[in-house]
Image 1 (cartoon, one colour):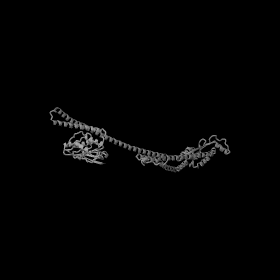
Image 2 (cartoon, rainbow, N blue to C red):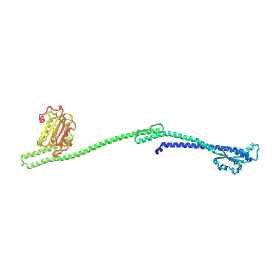
Image 3 (cartoon, rainbow, N blue to C red):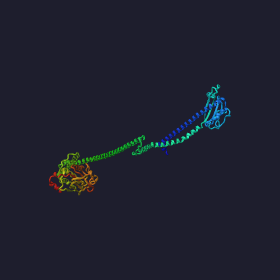
Image 4 (cartoon, rainbow, N blue to C red):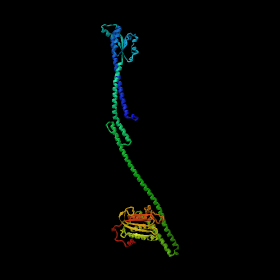
Length: 553
């Protein structure tokens, strides 16, 4: 048995109960033996007193007569009792008159040898120390009683004690009785201890089993198993303890489930808040990046606008100074040339200022222009006429493919022409000599993804394509940003303010359309935009002849 087992509650309980029962049994046996010994001893004392009283009455007349032989006969007859070890009869002075010891005849011994102390402690006697000595005086009353009984009254009887009878009884029978009682008690004590052990085992199992179950359940719960419960087998204190333990385990399990649920909920909330914070952080970073980019673009725009404003103003100022100082000496053709330059630079300034004002109005959400059904063929014709001179100067061919039966568009003619001029101007700007720029239109009756459109589109779709240098794919979306100008290795930084495409995007989207671009570097670019088609009831019957001719061209 290991140390833990030796120190267990079961072993302690068994050891304590068995020790207590054995102690009680031994104590009761000892008490019973002592009581038996005391009873036998008292019985021997009473018996010795009775023998001494009898011998005193018998020996009284013989002492008065001085008959030694009769006294010796009396003591010899008394010694026949197995419990009597010695008898001594002495006179009034204490001198032994007659005495005897069991197994010895001392009638012939001298007076000193008749001392009862010497008799009790004589060598060779094993029971000399286990003697009960009883002394009874022979009183004058006994002598008078004897005198009257013999009808011979004697006036000379002594008035004091006549003599003494001493009887010594052996305690051997007392020891025998005690031994016999001990032998009888030994099996009784053994059986009692055995029964107590069995009863203790039964009681111990009844008491310690619930405790062991509680210990196992406590260890299981401590290890994390909250499903284990204790069986309730009684309604006593252990049963109440088991019920309380089960209630505690239920409450602990419920509390742990709540904690886990709260923990999961808290984790979800933390995860959600973290995701929101990350999203906001990304949004802030993006906004910051956009603001930085916007600031950079604005700085570039201010520089471009300053340059665009300074260049024509410088030209106008220089020509004005020439005209002011040499007006009389300049040929007429030279003067007209200077005036055309002034007109051209003035138009350039007017267009730049107009672009800035248009963008400002569109960004600040001005009132939506009144939409009317317009002939897209006329708008295309006007736009082509506006850029025809530029195309001829650059050596670029213009192509147009607008079906004559194209439905009217729901828009504003001037704004659509502005969008077309911006797209055609950009196409011409990046198309080398000998290239071509084409404009096409078609009607999309149903909403669908058309030509890689970012969203499903419908209505009238217009495309402006060129055979220029193209735009890198990563910059296709950025070309519509404000102040954005795409640089090209062949052309360098283009002229202009970089607002044309941004203004075109704002106009198209305010008319409910969509604008996007497709391009392959070295293969040219194509810009698409859509406009809602007008209802049949909103359109005038037929199209102007000029629009038809422009569409045919």
